[in-house]
Length: 397
Image (cartoon, rainbow, N blue to C red; front, top):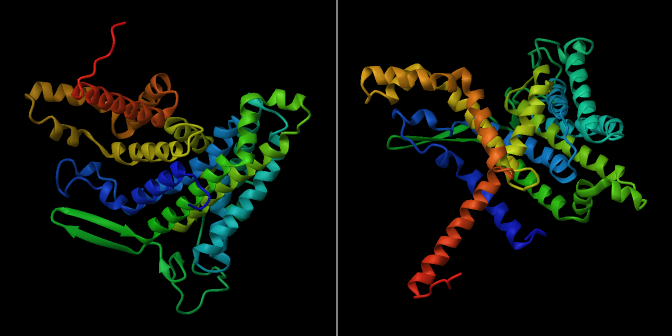
């Protein structure tokens, strides 16, 4: 289907089903219960899941296929956001032109940075991309203030030109009249499920982005990028110039980042220089490695995992911990709260760091490798059970 083999088609359909029913899947606990704080099915967080999933999928095209580790991809995220907000200020609040411009401008920016950075490889390439990102961050705060509005950030004002806005045009971000903040809430018993227009638009774009990523991975171009990762020096010895391929991968990856930045601005029409910081670039590296670099679904899993920790575990405080351990004697309850306290709230980064270390040490292939190990164990167990049921035994060694 759509030029994909059976396995890739199954993967794409599975991603589509999960994104479609995400409001149900991410809200497993009833409202008002002690576990309701672990629900993640509210619009803002679901939008972040898919937007950062797009960001990570694009980064994986560069890092997962070529092995080139960029520490400056947040620059394209920021450029995409600024471009989208400028479209809102100059034309209208329709998100489609804003997203298109975000992809185009970030792609042009990626051509320039990639052409210079790809003259080097390894750690030198990583340092160059980090330098460009920090330069972009500094310029957005200082020299380019007339364009970026500096520290305050770029946002839409009532006196902006908006040449394509009519008297009846929506004043919020929209897709041909359908506002991105439009939400339908379905109440079933003690459960509440939110269906947000902005989320489903982002989810549809993510599915397209995943489909294109699969086609790139399976194409001759993708095979060439994998060859670059395995032994670029040998390819150079054969007389093959690999730079056009790596530059194309860099630009495509930058356009994915710009698309994510444009979607962020479409959900919340505000762009700030903090989106270009090196910490944002490091975050997408963590997402990709945590989920499984070089895999098709891994970056999305990593993005969802990190954003869940950021938004859910950071909200847990001592009051919540006391509720959890209320069944314990008072002294033991206070002791458990004291032990767990550094790992929640503002200390959620510590928990994430420990989990990341465990994944890197025990699951170098990320969460995808963990899933593969579990499925292999289940298959072996089912096979053993079937053999026992049929009266077969393994021969003695």
